[in-house]
Length: 155
Image 1 (cartoon, helix red, strand yellow):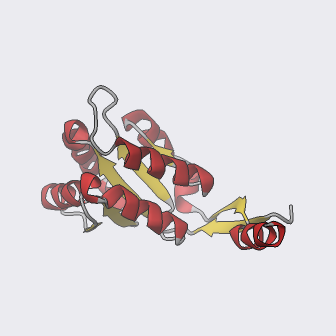
Image 2: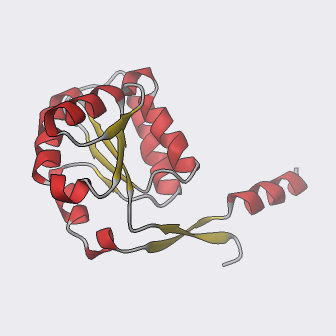
């Protein structure tokens, strides 16, 4: 399709690691169990989560701000820049989050850019065990440059 472009997720993935407070321990345990796979990828995450994973597992994790202070939005911006390929977000569906609009915006931008997103341990296990973890992966997204040019002409 001419309104779409193909982007490639490389063999080495850029993985964002995020967890709500009630799920941080679970994500840290998951990272520890999967350390042998994760160490081959670039890891980043929201502030507190990134720091705790790094401290408890020894994995290098680039930290952004905490979620309520804009970290979810920073991760979303990295998706737009093409610098995040994969998200593991252990969210807590039973606890109200003050930054829920930011979380929804992150999930939306991940969908717009066709970024895989695990929202719990089971989905993270399935994604990490996929044979696509060791391969390049081509996916199509909207050609945003063309979309903007077409919209500018029509306004």
